[in-house]
Every structure is written in C-alpha cells, then in structure tokens.
Amino acid sequence: MTSVAILLGTLNGARYLPDQLRSIEQQTFRGWRLVASDDGSTDETLNILARFQDKHGSSRVAIRKGPGCGFVANFLSLVCEPSCTADYYAFCDQDDIWEDIKLSRALSWLERVPHGVPALRCGRTRLIDENDRTIGFSPLFKLRPSFRNALVQSIAGANTMVFNAAARELLTYCGEQVRVPSHDWWLYLLTTAAGGKVKYDPDPTIRYRVHPENVVGSNLGWSNRSHRLHMLMRGRFRHWADLNTAALEPFRPRMTPENRELFDLFCRAREQGFWARPITFLRIGAYRQTLFGNLGLILAVLTRKI
Image (cartoon, rainbow, N blue to C red; front, side, top):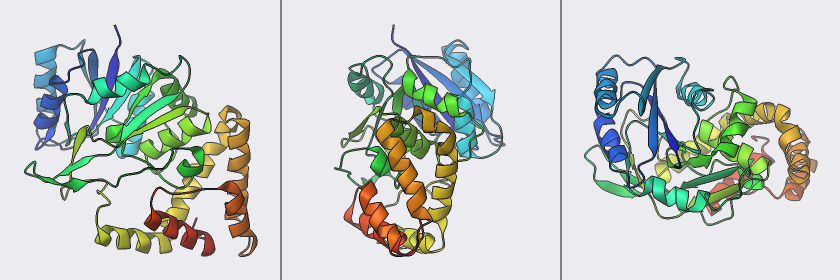
C-alpha cells in the first residue's frame, strides 16, 4: 500500500492545531503517517499531539523533539530523519486546514512520475483569517517551474508540497545542517537542479491561515509588495542568494550538465561589474513568476542586490 509521511512542525500552536489535525483525519487518502517535531512548545501543543497519538496509535502518529533552532532546521531535521521512511512525503504547518483531497490529488500526479525521478507537487493556497473566513488567494503563477526560476524565486509554500522519495533523497544528500532561507525554496532548487519534475497546481487544496503569529506572511497586497521591495534594497534578497549558492555548491555533482552551467553563470554574474552583470543574467534567462517580481529582479540585478 502506498504510504505518505506527513511532516508536521510545531511550536506553541495549540490555538489552531486541532483544526489541522482534524483535516488530516478527514483525508480521502488513508495511507498517511504523521510525524510531529515540536520545537519547544510551552502551551498545550504537546498535550494535543499526545491525545491525537492516543487516538490513532504510536505506529501511525510519532512525536519527537525538534532541534530548537527555528522552523527551517526543524523541518529539515524531520525530513532527514533516517527512520522516517515512506513512498511520499508532505510538509505540514500547524495552523492550516487541508482540503480532504489534498493528498489524493497530489498522488494522482506523483504516481505517474517514473520511479527514481525526483518529483514535487506544490500549488496555490486559499487564504483564511483567524476565524476561518476566506480573505483571498496566494498569487497565481502561470510560468513553467524550472531551475532558472528557482534560482531567483520560491514558487510555493512548503505547506502545499508533497514529494516523492527520490526528491527526499536530494534533501538527505545535502543534510539537515545546511543553512538556507527556507526548506520549501531549498526543495524546489534541488528538484529542478537535478532535472526532476515539478507540478504547480493552480487549484488550492489547503487553507493557509494568515494571523499575527505567522512566521512567514502571505505576500498578499501592495503593502507586502512594498515591504519586500524595501527588504530587497536593504540586501535581504542578496543574503538569501548567498545562502542558497553556498548550499548548492556541494550539490554540483547532482545537477544536470545544463543546470550546472546555469549555476556557474549565476554565481559569476552576481560578482560582475555593472555592465557585464545584466548581460550574463540575460544569458541565464532567470525569471520570476509575475510582472512585479520580474521588475524587482531587474532592479536587483542593476543594483547588485542579488
């Protein structure tokens, strides 16, 4: 029977966690196993997880202690845990709500990918507020997922991601100690760099909760866009690129020849002077998924903020 390991990261999530666990119970795909990594909760989170474990049994629900080094390290420690084995894997946040077809819809595509080919399914999200009311949707991306895109953009939140064992092996190859801005961007980078397949689903299968305690925001609206532009000019985007390129360097042997060349060009372009830099970036063909994003990318290239 096909198995899916749901990788849940928690930290003081008691307020919304029961809704998320209930939505996991209601999945039409029944072959799931939940592995929760708690990063030091001081509220009722661990008690809620323990009751869920009592209900479903320790063979189906496992609870472990996280590394206590932030959400990225927590999720990477989960996915790299040797004892956590399955046919497929799904990242899971503590405060979302999954539609009941989330796993089955992802598997309907993933199971068609040839064995051994890294594959990642991700997608758009429905945004809800603290009272479960719909307040919008994440941006709709229409351009093809690729390494050229992944070099300059994370295409989807980890909470939408379901991936196969071959994609998980790329994460374990790099290890849990790697320093990257986010685990979702990292998985997108590795999968595309290795020549794997990525499917972006425009139809949301999760309700992403937007609330003041979110670690990562929704990126919705002009205020968030202006904030991202401000952070770009302060150098955050370049810092993220520094982390990603340093982490990708040991992965070069696993890249396709074409992507290895693109990566080398990308690293070279980031250090070139004003006139050479845009020309090299044109050769790379890097792109983001929206007009505003591409305008920001052009600005970043011109001002050496990438």
